Amino acid sequence: MKRIEVKLSLPVVAPLLDLMKASSDVLEAQIAAPITLEDIDADFREEWRAELLGGQQEELHALMGLFNSDFFINGVVAFDEDNAEIIVRACSALRLRLRRHDLRVLEDEQLESGGVDLETLPVALQKPFMCYVFLGTIQELIIQHLDGAILRGPAGDADAGDDGDDGDVDTEDAEEDKN
Amino acid sequence: MSNPAPITARRIEPLFAGAGTRPGLAPEEVALPESAFAVQGPWRVVVLNDPVNSMSYVVLVFRKVFGFAEPRARRHMLEVHEQGRSVVWSGLREQAELYAFALQQWHLTAILESDEAH
Image (cartoon, rainbow over all chains, first blue to last red; front, side):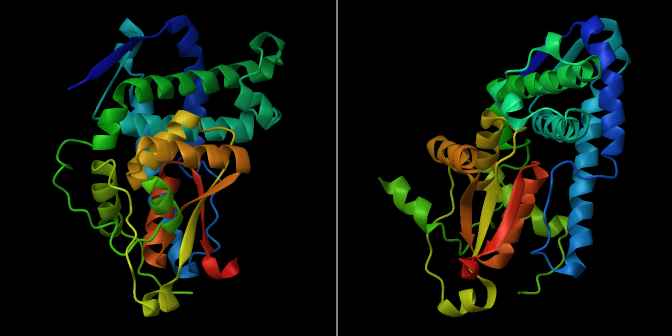
């Protein structure tokens, strides 16, 4: 099993964990991404929302679980095919929360271009921004090294059936992909 | 509007089992009886841009959820990034819901649109 271990600087990362935990706690009851369920039947929306929230909670528990007592001894977090997908998703959820709440004063263009200078940010924004970057770095590391594992899925899924594509149409893409 | 069955773990699982474990197995073009569309669709799954999720993340999600090959996933990602939205799939309502749900599980902003609205 492919596994990557990352040694983090405790003095840098430890102060970020409180904010990550606080954001994670908020996301126990709130879906991170802006979702629109207007097109979904009313009877159906709550179940849809609850399923999304349940998955998100599981992701965040997995992420915060990386920073356990062992982490505070050796500063190491490990990613492998068992946790890569869930951690990548958790990072996305937390980054969305940070962006929509703690970093809401920043312009989209600033965040997308990476053109934010930590030193020039107001002090109140520095820790959220460091958190945002830290989580993005974890994501990129995992995607760079474990994307194959994520695409394959956890062991045991390989024999699962392919029920999803019956009757689908994707005319535009199907045409272009032939070229 | 159709009246789909409630989402359950059992109902959602096949999407990941199929699309998730078989990269490269993209949806195929399949002829459907007109009556199927008349009752249920067609519907579009549209992904909207967000300033948070990285390009590599979005490509990964498209590959995982739809089984797209990387160039195709990248093309949709760039469309989202540059035009603010991309139609990533269209077809029957129930399957469109499954895809939209899967994308939302990955924290992308995915919506459903009826083709009749266009």
